[in-house]
Image (cartoon, rainbow, N blue to C red; front, side, top):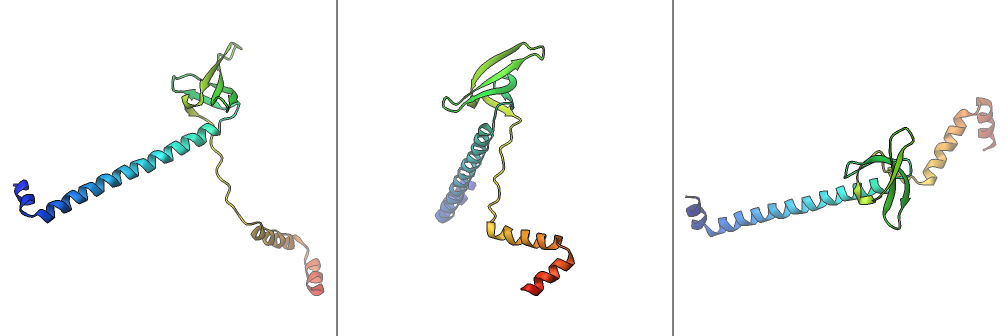
Length: 139
């Protein structure tokens, strides 16, 4: 019955196919964009790792980063017991699964000219009333 309905009206079938195609394209574009965001966040997290950061690898090895080699894209992980028996393992940065290192948020770009009047205003508020009146008379 559905095939008869679509076959009887050729324009409707093309509209239906167009809608399905548009939805599929929208889904793939949305999927691509969200994957790019995840990859960007992952790269920011990896780049935020510094010596002393706690890391868990994809193999389940937990430890503390002691050295980072950006040229080789690797890091050295110190793991072991608290009795002083440590092992040092070298991993590729892509082996990081979890970390406590947080990427630093981007500082908002505030114009320096906008900040200066606020500082002057604050400085004026801290002056005694006598000094303010003298300055106003001199102006």
